[in-house]
Image 1 (cartoon, rainbow, N blue to C red):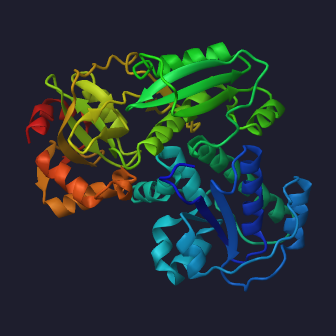
Image 2: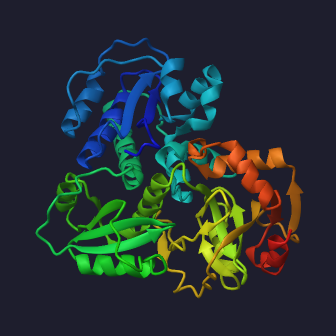
Length: 464
């Protein structure tokens, strides 16, 4: 783990009792993470009960279900939800909305980090959470404010009939597979980086805002996988050899047993090249963010540059239109990034023209990774400097002219702070942010409905 992330990403799974659904989810998720070489020191998963006191064994029906799927790991003693447990949690997950509602009613402070299974599934499918794991709850909560989430994936009840237990286990297992796949792709440097393979590995060296990240490709067809990574990251390929600061081991294995075998040796392993590209984009981004914690201001923002190298940062939560806006403006102005705008405290911008993650028709949850070269996006000039910070306020489906307005400094900083990775790691924290913000004319808000309407406004954004 990096020094910027001194404690594990801590997840608490809460059920009405602490002896049925919650321990099943805990043990399935822990088993999946272990299979992928993720230690408890990186991701720590616990469970607890809301109503019943702790100190009890897991219920027989749950034990049988776990044993039948080889997920049982010996004795289990339940614990009751407490303020101390919740204070340590980075994310809380419940199987049903009824459990979430009761938990939040008793402990209101955890509302922003507590999600049902349906919310987890829907929000992660919409949000490109390219951020350290400890920031995921905040990002999902921001997306929840504007999302309409169906409850079709919540558990129906805590019934103990055989059919209900089977349904519960199937839904929990599917949710845990989804979470493990996402979390492993963004875990800070897990796995055995020295593992040798019999296949012909190929490496791709990427420069992510100054961080040297090496993607080592393996699996059924390493050459094809490496070619796809190079094509997607065409504008971020390293131009000169450097010792990598982070190594990502990526493999595509079509056979399920081969995937399990490769995952157990520390490789992030997927079923297809498109799926591997979807996740490795997040992996590379998060590894670079981890490496520059405390050194750069890293904002979840799109960045576009005018011909003079002045960069406008467009700040918004993931899933709210940044990539669409970056793609639209990138046909007219230099594309700097669509997700992570890296700036030093003197205003120098470090470009990260990563692949753009585009939604694929059919809703598989896997987004297509397209190089800005393939999308006809312009290259920025050399010597980029931050010119303006703009908070986006997109109001879809409402025809209106874009409106630009300045925000007073303190409210503006409050609007920006949730979208900055590792802000507490900066030497002077908010003081650094305030000084940089004031040097570029403060914070502005852009209210708009359609990305195309912003193209003609860009010169005004630069000089607002």
